[in-house]
Image (cartoon, rainbow, N blue to C red; front, side, top):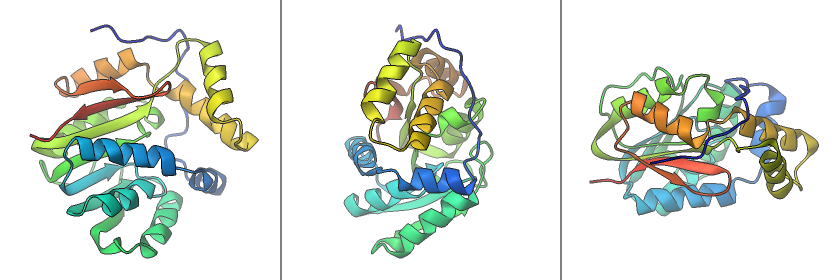
Length: 224
């Protein structure tokens, strides 16, 4: 299968968003729509049981997932203490707080035993990792056979004009700081073609690649 490429150079972002400005700025964004669409896909893929959220950020998706999937328990990890502080405040206010745990951990080397999880998911952290192969290898290692996989991220536009159009379309109402954050994230993302190559290197070549929106792509596998 042929996937979209990009003429833009990949320009890396900081791997960890742990300044106060970064964590507060990201947590202040409205993640309800994108988070709800992500949980919709988890439900479609048959997610249930014990789940791992890699790179949870401010912890929005675990709360949304537990609201809608009755038998889901979630271990959510991030490498940013400031992001996890936001996540823990959200958890404490949730009626589902006993089903969610947050832990400081590196996506490239996670402290869990092989095949520990029925579901492994991640939303928009691949573009923060210089070589995402290591994170995807961890996802494959930790997912039990027949489990649900959903790794969603931005993908790098083909041209600068396309990038500018996406920023104008999706971030016009954001603060200047958050607009530039979105622009930098698009620049740092893999192209869809690069994602396919990384997935193969991480032994996830049997997972499906689905272009979800004009800026997002998913690597996914349904429960068996």
